[in-house]
Picture 1 (tube, one colour):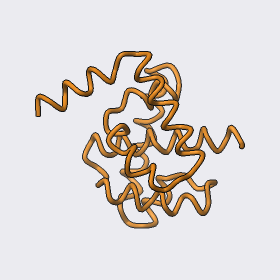
Picture 2: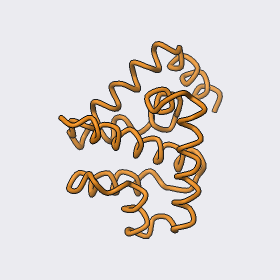
Picture 3: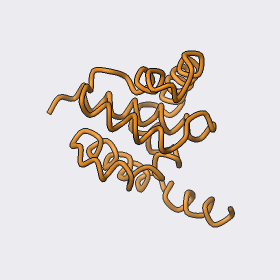
Length: 129
């Protein structure tokens, strides 16, 4: 399995997680875009979402910049992915797609969340709502 496909999955998950967190993308649109991504993993999720008219080209640029900044701030894609609570919320929905690259990226995020103690923090934030 290609590491570049897993990196693409991680980056797409970060992009989607930030889009959800910022209220730019709806969860059903993210799942639909990932379903299309499975057929051509060379296409970035942002491109698919623009093509599906789920986001505008300007929103894509904003989210791409936010994703890059978040990756830099967290010190890498795995930590950036683990730190996004909205990605945790996507896990069950994306698990149904049964894609190796997505599952490997999500499993890595789960491991990182546990190492960083974020699962406890995320569960507390859900209890507050």
